[in-house]
Image (cartoon, rainbow, N blue to C red; front, top):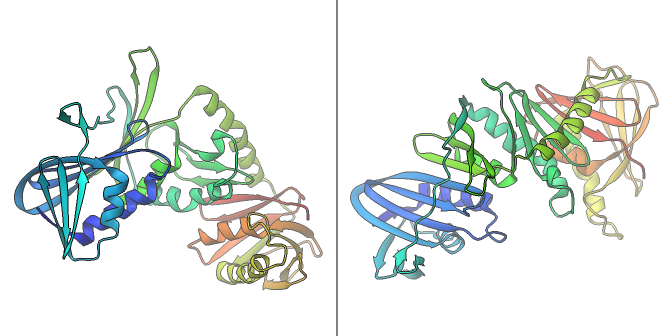
Length: 375
């Protein structure tokens, strides 16, 4: 069976991006039926993803192999096409003059079957636009980067989604407002959100609860198109959902507060200034922890200045429709600010501050909260 590398590799790379295979074992099934090829990956406990490809000629083929080995191998192939064949209990991959063998995985004497994650008792079904999925992936995920390698609570690594938007919080918070057709409350893991990268069109979303033999209830969600099926077992527990209500409500209160300072700023100008200041943190003698790069910010009617702990200063112009309390001074973490700016597609942002507690950065329906800090 010959497979064109380009489209197949694009899907493989997106699954590798999401699956975090160094930290969890997963199996992969390659199934060909007629003119269709299905690539399926699951770690059984959390996610199940299946992608359909078209074949130029009818083929019958089924193999189950180690997901990490197969995906990383295909990701590294540079030929325009490669061949897959089965020889007894081995999958052979031929790419140009290179040849590889992957052992198939068996349960006793039978080729392993991957259990499908499906919802038996659906309580919600509705379309969700791809724009919403992409905004969650590209905007809310930036908040979780702050705690990627830090011990924090389980909740601070999850995405809270309801019919009004998506909320993520760590040292600050991100509120991404949108409207879904039907009420829903769920928590998604970073792996599931990263799988949104697979979609380039609107999806049919389903949500529900299934009873397990031990009387436990399992919460599930699926996202599907004609050629892609992503299913997840969700970490939705009453205690976790209850814990997210407080931070979400507090963030909304901060966002809706009237502040003494309202600045309209160019995203490109501010991002360039922050990037230049962070160069000095990266190269400082102290080898600064890049998660925390404090700078003193001073506001005036026409500009804001940012001075880092090494004495380097950047000045950015304040644009029209701003009102500023001249001389207001605050400490802000440039690393947090940079993450927000990197997720901005807009030309301008608004910055609201003045209570010596929170800085609110808004553009359109997205708002980020960055706490004012201390040196």
